[in-house]
Structure formats: structure tokens, C-alpha cells
Amino acid sequence: GQNIDQPTEMTATEGAIVQINCTYQTSGFNGLFWYQQHAGEAPTFLSYNVLDGLEEKGRFSSFLSRSKGYSYLLLKELQMKDSASYLCAPMDSNYQLIWGAGTKLIIKP
Amino acid sequence: GAVVSQHPSWVICKSGTSVKIECRSLDFQATTMFWYRQFPKQSLMLMATSNEGSKATYEQGVEKDKFLINHASLTLSTLTVTSAHPEDSSFYICSARTLTSGRSDTGELFFGEGSRLTVL
Image 1 (spheres, rainbow over the protein chains, first blue to last red):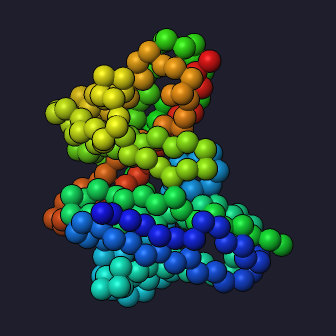
Image 2 (cartoon, helix red, strand yellow; image 1 turned 90 degrees about the vertical axis):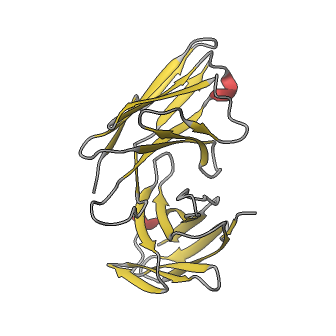
């Protein structure tokens, strides 16, 4: 079966660093996406990894290990506006995204 | 990035009526559009995959006669909730996939703003 596992909720302090982990099992693999979703809004694209390693994009970085079925999203210099849900979504062999429930990130002053 | 527009953002209707939601790709051609539903505090649930010029592919458990999807052009897909009932109240989101010429499909999705449906 296809499965996504990421923490339900995390709390971090403004200005700090947080890492959101994601493990997955899919039928085939065509890359993994991270999306950010604020409450009541549609998801917005953050990153896409298809090869192993770290992709850095400003304050956000995403890492992928295909052999381990593992990815993480790293957020640096946290800001209050980063409070949102973060969705890990691998793409299966049919190019369909498999969605988990996401990780709700709470940023405290 | 590419822009996907969804309309209406909010809709309130009486039970038994039908509601149409539009999803447009404004600056690119989208051969494939996806329709999702999201209940409060739950993950996105894929309802159907819409391919231009062909019938939509529905996920298991989604009633195709109730949720009519039409993808008549490369820039427009519509979702019609027929004979809506209060249990259909939800946040409906569309997304469209871009194709980059000369490269294989990265599958990056661009999402519409979402449509919040309330059925009284």
C-alpha cells in the first residue's frame, strides 16, 4: 500500500530552526513535493526533490533519500508567518501525488 | 509561477440545488487538472483526475454522478456538485499540472485558491 508518515504537530520558537521529517511508501516513485498550507487556504508549492540530496531555497531546504524512503523539510530563521501545515507528497509511478495529513507547525514568539 | 484561478471562492446554497465550480489555468495550458476535497483538519483528498477532452477518472468512493467534472479546454475544468446536501459542505480545491517543453513532466502542481461550499 501507499503510506505517508509525518508528525502531526510541531512547535518551534521564532528565529530558530525546525526539521519536519517524512517517511513514505509508494508504488513507484517520481519525486517528492513539499507544500505549505495556511489554514483555510490552498496549498502552495515549496520544493521538489527527485534525486538524493539537499535542495536549498532561501530559508527552506528539502532533503531526499530514495533508498530510505525519507525526506525532510528544514526551515531556518523561523518567522511567525511560517505557522502553517506542511504537506509531504511523494509522486507515484502514475505521476499521482500521495497526500499525507501534514504537519501543523506552531511558531511561538 | 503559473497561475490557477478558481471561482467562486465562497458559495452557500440550499440543499438539493447544484453548484458549479470553475478552475482556470491563466497563463499555461493544463492537460491535466485535479480536484480535491478537504474537510476541516484533514488532509487533501483527491476526488478525480480530469484530462482535457476525455472523461475524468474518479477515485474510489467518489460518486461520478454526483460530482460532474468537465474539462472542455486546456485552460478550464469545472466541477458540478449536483443535488448538494449538507454533508457535501467542504473546501474544494483544484490544481493543474504544467508540462515543460523539452523535459519530462515534473508534475509540479499549481493550486487554485479553493472554493468553500456550505450547503444549508
